Image (cartoon, rainbow, N blue to C red; front, side, top):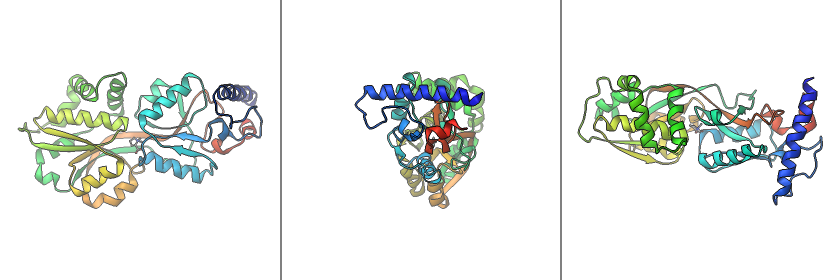
Length: 309
Ligand code: PBE
């Protein structure tokens, strides 16, 4: 039955990992499979994260606490480093846990599953909001109109992300997507006048989805004659920049969960223009070849406890 199937698959994954780890210099990981072995050892107790300050990091830290994942740590780096680590592990079928979210091509490129989060630490599906600095509406009503009208679907964003992943420069990917989706873009620019070099500063960071959306917005505004400055910074300065007025707009605020701490801090000094995308997903994910690991709780168990399921 189910249990029968679980044991060999898990044992194989485990032994494979032991064999692979055995080849490397990492000797602190167990040398033989055992039922009392903590699941964490399989993964070297590491959750592969992205940029410091990302919303998903705060939530990962919280889930380590709430699910009592003793000894586990979140490895900070960058989205691209996380994806490179995932790619390497995936090719060798090694155990790996990553921070993951959709829209993202990682779910189409790899067979991944989000770990069940019974305590709902990562929240329900979120919406992505467009924010502008206070006063932007009065200063630049024409551009404000564009931001008010900017909205698209998860599939649209995923397409742009995929083009970038396939090697196009973000600006070129944005241009190509815009050319291929005139109906959507026409809704954004309806009633938006052409201008002559008015300046707009878009603030963003190195998250794959936000690079894509920001470049699309920048290109659409440039086509309307705007002189668009892209300012890439970390999460905290994005919100601080809008609050202080040094940046005009941000199209990648994940709410109500991922960016809530920044948003709550600055919301009075920022104008929330509206939702530009609905239905995101976030959490921790493992490749589906990790058949026996299905929930955040599983990460804190011993292997024999998984087998009992
Ligand atoms: N993300 C994608 C971001 C928001 C956009 C989920 C990686 C984060 O702050 O976690």
